[in-house]
Image 1 (cartoon, helix red, strand yellow):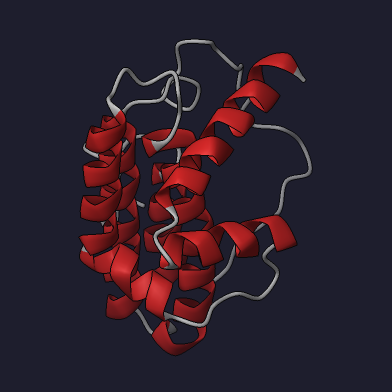
Image 2 (cartoon, rainbow, N blue to C red):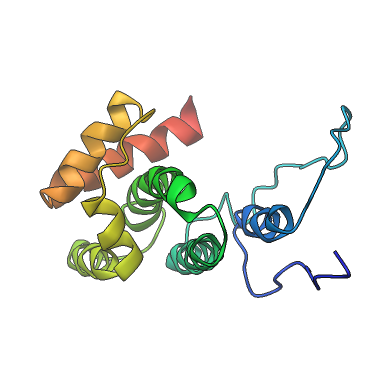
Length: 171
């Protein structure tokens, strides 16, 4: 790690920055060992960035995936990794919209949510993702949500956000 100056990117947050770090790390490895014991123990916290919905979280995750994409494009395995990348981004898009923009715990007017939704879809990496065909291994539920997103069925997505919030807090 010292040879290639591979350090944790302090700007990235939201939980996916470990993935970005690993991309940079594994691109420079010639071998690795597997240790079959936990080296990290995550403790869920009600105030963590993954538990509290803010629009800033969407910004963090987009910045992280933009960094991951840059690493992929600069590496030796771009052709084999890009389909996987866009598949993972499909999940990011669904989560950012349902648990982010349309999360009822965010204090926003419906018209502001519509604007945020439309602005989110205009982000380059989100637009590219939705135009890709990386649907493999996505659940039927996520595929249905992606169908609604692509057709800009905002009211239905808003209702799904309410249902998802209920699931997370009551079930």
